[in-house]
Image 1 (tube, rainbow, N blue to C red):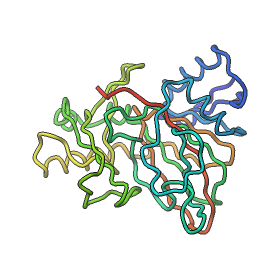
Image 2: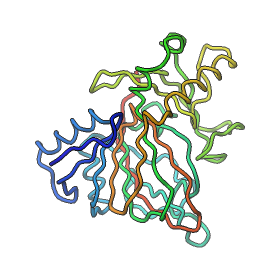
Image 3: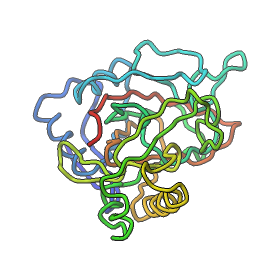
Amino acid sequence: MEILPLTPAIGAEVRGVDLAQPLDEAAFRAIERAWYAHGVLLFRGQDLTEEDQVGFAARFGELGQVINKHGGVALTRHPSVMLVSNIRQDGKPIGALPDGEMLFHSDQCYVERPCMATFLYAIEVPGAGGNTLLANTTLAWETLPAEIKAAVEGRKAMNVYDYAGAPTQRSEALAADAPRFAHPVVRTHPATGRRALFVNRLMTQYIEGVPRAESDRLLSAIFDHQEQRRFVYEHVWRPGDLVLWDNRCTLHARTDFSAAERRLLRRCIVLGERPF
């Protein structure tokens, strides 16, 4: 096994591992340590069934369930697996989040126990675009201006996700029943002890206990700071890529791509703890 950093800030490629085969305990622990160290792991050239992907994910913890299919036609067997695709059958997407750009976010940050790990596997990808951007929110917190750190220390922010309105872009008119939960603006990673920002442009609406105008100012400054390219790895997908990221210390986004090209990826998740 080789573990090669992808950028100075975030991510590593793991080589010499076939995830369709059983991993012994030593190999798994080496992968887990690399994940804690880099936040994002890339495994290229994998040939994975849904069962292979779920089996690997289950080594990390309790599998989480897909909360909403986003109106897609369910073509998966496991409740923790979701297709991310723009392919349509009878005019309906076979999966979720089919088209275009998607703003930076952390998966399921709007529930009490957000997922800690996301495993995204590429089956079909467009010739250009549809890349995944992954940002290191630990470094973003550590380099945040002291004035903003002091203003958000100990505070919580409300995260809301409006499935019906604009699941890939920020919603201004939120549905009353849109799922929501307040979490610390800065959370502590339970394995590493390092702190990381836990707010995002797509779903974080406001900081609790702060006047709305000041909340908007602080969040805008944080969003701009944590999305800087110095904190980001941009993954250009190839079929057979599996990317694993830690939602407790990273954000991810998607670049735009042509609606005329097919894109099919398979996602599964592992449930995390309540942020603290």
